[in-house]
Image (cartoon, rainbow, N blue to C red):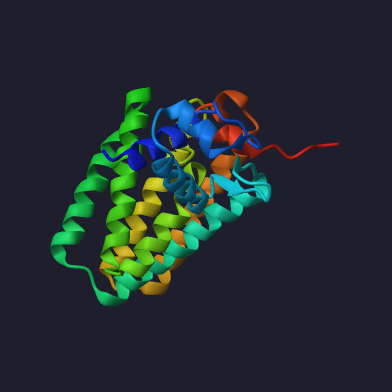
Length: 242
């Protein structure tokens, strides 16, 4: 990997892992010394993290690690749902090939085996995350729109805004299995709508599917043990209650 990619991955991991706290100042020189790479790739990595929304430029120079309010997290999830809704509507209107649909149906069949089990282990949840990301990526690909795909990727760049952002938090919650079954039913319905060329229905289902992540956020915020399973959770500012 290039030094820029190495610096980007290391910095992102330090932020999402909680080693760099919200509000912490990041100067190029300090990051260079910490990562052991030259200044140019560090500058490029910080600029990329600013695009992703994980850091922001400060007037005095350098960057700070961003914090996110609960409202901002909810809005990020909602935005991702809107864009994914657009993608599946386009997919339905354009028409998906039988081969593409068959591939996604195969992915759904594997997910079905997982959610149909009486109990799910940690490994099962990790496999669900992988399959869920494959399925969502496949839906976006059906739209055959590089512009939409790029914008969906940008919206889902924050870990808690991605389709699987709160799945691991579910693993420690008693209602986890029930929520996964709801999500799987929505998966089946949106694929059916695309196959039947029902664009409006596909879009509505996909937007509702994103709102399931907002429900998972609310549950995780009430359970510290669950919240610790969410990458980047340290960046979320908890709403103060009277």
